[in-house]
Each structure stands twice: as C-alpha cells, then as structure tokens.
Amino acid sequence: MHGRSCRAHRRDGRGRRQRRRDGVVHAIVGRRRGWDRFLRDRRVLPLEEVMSFQVGSKTVGASARVCIVAEASANHHRDLPTAERLVIEAARAGADCVKFQTALPDEIAAEGVEIPRGHDTLHDAWLDRLGKRTLRGLLASAGLPRPWHRPLKALAEREGIEFLSTPFGLDSARFLVEEIGIRALKVASGDLTFTPLLEYAAGTTLPIFLSTGGATLHEVIGAVNGPLRQADLRLAIMHCVSSYPCDPADANLRAIPALRQRFGMPVGWSDHTLSIEAVPVMAVMLGATVLEKHFCVDDDLETADTRHSLAPDAFARMVAAVRAVPAILGDGKKHPRPSEMHDRLWARRDPSDWLRPVKEAREGRWE
Image 1 (tube, rainbow, N blue to C red):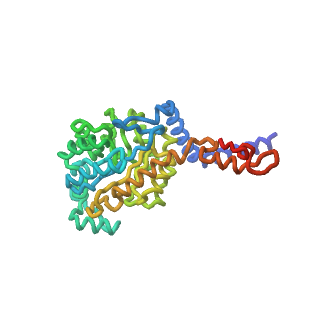
Image 2: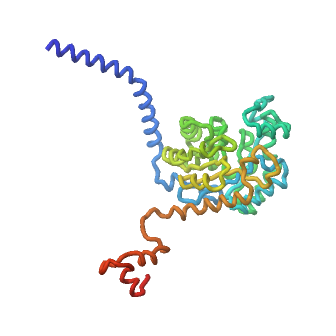
Image 3: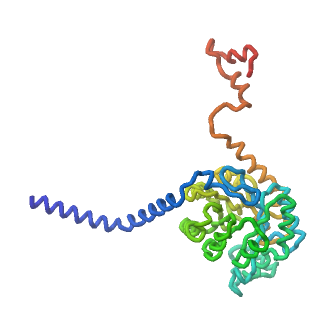
C-alpha cells in the first residue's frame, strides 16, 4: 500500500509539473475559445438580416449583386473637370459607387514628417516630380477640395452612381455627414485603430465600410466589438492588403470567407492588384459582396494611385467579369441544364438494346 501511494504521489507530481508547463497553452486556447463564445453569442440573427443593408438605392449583402466601388482617390489631379470625368466614366463603366478622399492635412499627419526614400524607387521618382516629400504634402494632393463635394455629388446623382468619400479625420467626417449628406462612410485601413473616428461613425445611422489593410484579426475584433459595436448591422468589413500595387501572391483571398464566417457580416475586397479579371472574380467567388478598385481616366496624369488604377475600358471589363460570376456559379444543385438536354438524349443508351440513342430520340422526340 505504501509503495503504491508513493508511485501515485510521483505521478501526481509529474501531472502538476506538466500542467504548469502547459499552463500558457491552456490560457491561450481558453482566450481563443472565449472570443469564439463571445462572437457566437453577441448577436444571433437570420442570415438575411445580418448580411445586408442599404447604401442609398444600392443593397450591400449576401443576397444582393456585388457592390462595385470605383476608387478615384488622388486621380482627380486637383482638377475639377478631371474629377467630373471620373464620376461620369465610373458610371458608364458599370460601377455602383465612385469614391474620393476628404482630408485636411493637419488632421492626418504630423508636421514636417518626410517620406523615406528607398522603399519604392518608382514612387520616389514620382514624389520628386511632384515636389512633395512630406506626408502632409502628399496627403494634401490626394484630398478632394471641399468646394467640389456638392457639385460632384449632384453629378453622381444625375449619372445614377453613389457618391462616397473617405474622411481622414473627425472634422472631415462631420463635413461629409452633416454638410454634404453622404450616405455611407468608409474608414481607411490606417484608421482602424483611430477610436474617435470609429465612435463618430458608429454614432451616425450610416453604413460603414471598414478597411483592414495591415491589420491583425485581433485588431479587427477590437474595432468591430469595441467602438463599432452599435453599428454591426450596417457594417461591411473590407479585406485589404496595403501594398501599392499588391502582388496577387499577397492577396490572401481566403481571408474573405474566414472574416465572413467569424463576424457574420458582409465582407468586401479592396483590390490593389493590377489584375483586371482573375483576382476580382476569385474574390467574388469566395464571397466578397463589395469590390473596390482604383480607377483613373487618364494614364498620363501621374498621381500616387495611377499605377495601380484601371482605365475605363479595363474597369468595364472587370465589371462584366464580376457580374457574370453568379450565373457561372449557378444554384448549387446537380441537375441537367437546358443546354445539355439534346445531347443527354443522344448520348444515353436505351435499355432495350443498350445502344444509342434512347428510344425517345429514335422516335424523333427530343423534348
């Protein structure tokens, strides 16, 4: 009895040591399971309620056609006629929305911060020609002048396309919401952790597109379940890779269904690749309900975004390819298509003699 007791004691001691060694692992797994329970219990709604919302006359969600956003960004080149062409050509190319950027340099970047050289030689050469090496100067060149917002929004309404703009600060957000009457807000990837802006956006009644370039899943969870929690039924999470242009090998499109499964919300793809058809189509096939792509009207007007933007003809090709995806995917049920019924009768063997075609086809009945 005494020996058995000692052996049991030694086993218990080894067990305690093993549990101590595994303590960190158990804690990590426990936190992960806690997040899963928290997200699962946070809101349990039918898919059609969770997965769709309105942006003006456009529906965003799993049951709607893909919402395509033409990202004009800095491609207006600080020229109003060019900005007007961006709106008109985006509508003609089939986009649902055209998006600009609204910013005051002093609400984005610290003064005097210069953009370092060496990361991208082509970008360095462009900045030198532009004569803007500071971050404030670069961002000032991309922002849409405030007096242009109303006429461009009115033009977009006449063209049947939704006017959007990304605010890069609280003052810009208030301007868009309270003065311009914008009907959705886009949060840039760099502002995923900018709590005051997220809180303001959540406090409006507007749909929100949340970009997640460069983000960890923990950061996305923090934004969605923190300052944006009250906006969860009007929120679309935009998978994004903050590289310009983005190598398709870095696109990580499998993050789209992963984000959709985890959050139960519409997930989009903000595409910085140079791909016209392959990457956008794959993103939509994987469940992207919003597709954003940079758009320009003149390749000769060099801006920070020209080299990863599509001109109107290429953008229209992308739209056509994306719009074809639902028909290509079909209904998911295995059954003969109308186009193959004739060949089905011709190719099948009749059980009477096991020769082709079937009896109905021999008798001239092809229906």
